[in-house]
Length: 110
Image (cartoon, rainbow, N blue to C red; front, side, top):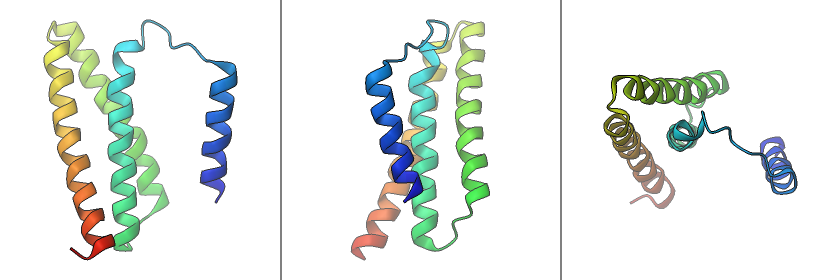
């Protein structure tokens, strides 16, 4: 319940404050969001499987975001940022859909 309350408060504050993302960080934000979604879906799957550990979730969440952003940053420095961004999105997208399928199977027993 605390997490839901924190989410609601965060959304409300974000709507009223209207934070601006610095231009330097803009290319990494979509990748970070996809990486965070991968961790969230993985955590939900682990919770439904009965193997959820909060410390593992936090470390997974943070490391997914940092590693994905670092890969895109490295790609930018090498001149292949768009290709590495696409690669990261594809890999994380596959993981998200895999976790979503496992969640669906668990919930609907199908």
